[in-house]
Length: 389
Image (cartoon, rainbow, N blue to C red; front, side):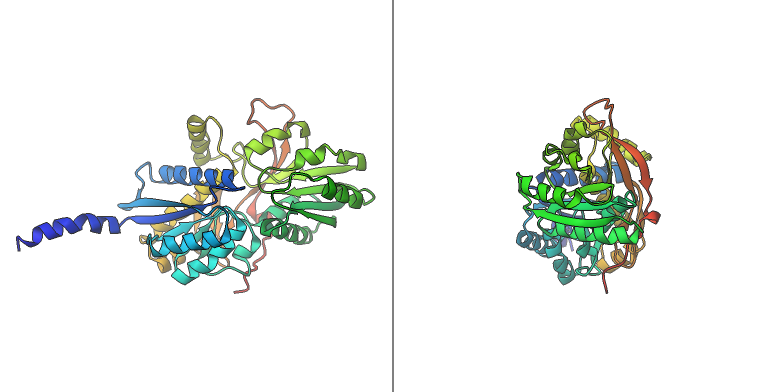
């Protein structure tokens, strides 16, 4: 019997390691969406820290986070998720930055029968016709963005400039549906799609101006763009000559700080650090400023929300077993820096508030950018179920 003791002692560390909860975080850390990915990772790790009181464990299980860079490439995203589930034995995964890559990852979650929490990709198809029961999304969807924007526009004429890939096309499609869903009488008169890495917007902007200039007021040019936003370049072309107002979707803070010349311009956003009033957001803002000399941004808040969903699910399920997690997460509410989110049972989309903002005229510092016009509660955003499952 004594001869077995060394063997048992040798096995104990391996046994303990096997009890860790392994979480894979996949993000586009290189490429055009690099800033988004870095924010997601920062927010995710700060969320785990806050929610576990710095212990990085749940019910005695240590949390091990495995970070992978898919470079926003669909083939790589698919490969890395399979690697995370198969080789790394991840219990649950979170990701990714690009909608194209996220869509490629969805079948992998079904193949391995493991939960994937989608953050921050927004394409409607993720919780729509490409969805499967292993997919939960803390990120807002294109339709939630669109419903928020549509709620601020009751009449007039609209044109869109968007990126020529899944995110942009999905967002414009959602915008048109949202106008109808909210009862708006505004008409979409023109759409323009430009390459994601475009730097010259002269031709598409002029085509939008020409399409809008004689249409009923108000005339709005909506800009749907991930990465460096073209608003300043379009503003330089003086759309006001044609009675056209620009309507930007919210963007990351380094982009929005370049919009100071557009004080009074209104838009909608899913998070701005100064809007939510709750204990979690207070800690997040104060701690982020302390560590990074700036407040948290949209995608860091998204990463924090994903961390909250993961921690809440693992704690309530008492297990990393996939079926127990799914049963727990369907209809589950969880606290985030935005307030409470809830996973809808039908498609596992997180229902959440959005915000109508105005660019401030008087800004106290370089990050004091927006003022709140109104919080748009989830109950006012009639999000359709589109998964057809």
